[in-house]
Length: 285
Ligand code: C2E
Ligand code: MG
Ligand code: MG
Ligand code: MG
Figure 1 (cartoon, rainbow, N blue to C red):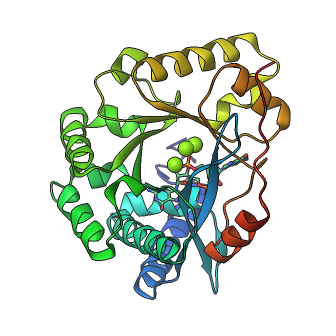
Figure 2: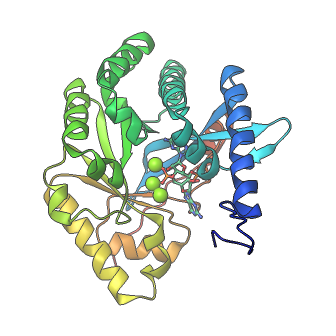
């Protein structure tokens, strides 16, 4: 309510909105500090082949544990970073950090086929993005095919032509392109055909209804069919239970990522996890 009280006193911000604005300013300032002092960390969540359970790759996810503010979820700080433009720095940092980590895994003979890095819409407005990625690949010496770039469906839609161009340039470098959170935006399935992506990730929100809601199952089945018919690898994210895995295997989904395998882990913990991980093969029923 803009006019909160009578007497010509207009109040454009409710106390709650004010608090939120202050929180954002505090977060933005603390984030600037965290970036400057290299306090962000990457954790890596395993992705496995649905049927065989064998390693497919990992997704790199940013973590910020602030000495004064405590743990701040990526949902919050990525949103702030997108508003303030700090996402530019975070994207560059995460790309470099993930590729360096992959180079180290390769040097140490650790078998992690690919690492996926999340990039935001803003990066795709930067014409120098492919150049930057090429530099990081050269600097770290990792084969381009070991890197995947995840972009959200809404990124694709908001800035269609430019995003397609950037994605195409990355594909030409030999980098994999993945469409993240598929099903949460408003692109039609037919849109998928025109995109230079070789992987599509079904959003975690579809996993809830997988066991109980027929319509959810129909949608997920359709996405898997269309993705595969376009030559894409279909990844389901947020897989928490054995029952969900079985349903996804029955649907012939390619790759699974979720807590039933592992939460995102720091590299040392990921290596420990890998050492004791025994892939368990399951057949469609
Ligand atoms: P996302 O890229 O879709 O990443 C998947 C999210 O689902 C991660 O949340 C992951 O921890 C969570 N997740 C995975 N499996 C399960 C599961 O079985 N159950 C549940 N409940 N959750 C699961 P996280 O790490 O909190 O990240 C949230 C979002 O923040 C990411 O969604 C991504 O959009 C964004 N994000 C995180 N790190 C970065 C980054 O470095 N750059 C950019 N641009 N965005 C990032
Ligand atoms: Mg992602
Ligand atoms: Mg995702
Ligand atoms: Mg998601």
